[in-house]
Length: 211
Image (tube, rainbow, N blue to C red; front, top):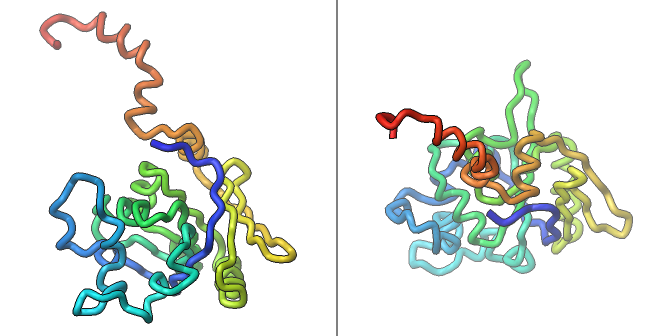
């Protein structure tokens, strides 16, 4: 997995809540497990017209957002089924980070991202950044005022910076273990292999009938 330390790119606003994985990558594209070629199918039903031509009204088909690499959405992004293809499509379409807000509702906390989607993202070098609703509202406002606005998402500093004439920054929290894994570019297998010497030593002590 490629390490993630910091990324700068154009912000693309997707002003929708509860974007599920079927909207991100529809079910007809789940037949392949090759883990390649999913970028063109990202948001397929929104991105294309029935005749297969790009939908000019969809935000990612319009300049400058068609060159974006940081996606800004609303809460509960990636809900629905657990398909890892959703993250593959996002990454292969050129997105390195997604920003979404948590939201307080009736005494509970609605997360920015569905748990399984967030975990799949970390394992595929896509950073999910959860900010407050007010902070994400501010980002949407700035993108509306300055189309093509760039932001730097810095995992080392845990900070999102909007590159305005007067820069605005937002701090974000992230699980310490996830942060270290992404900084080092380690997926689950890579993390396990860090302990290869101990694993090898343990295997030598196992009885033969367990081999």
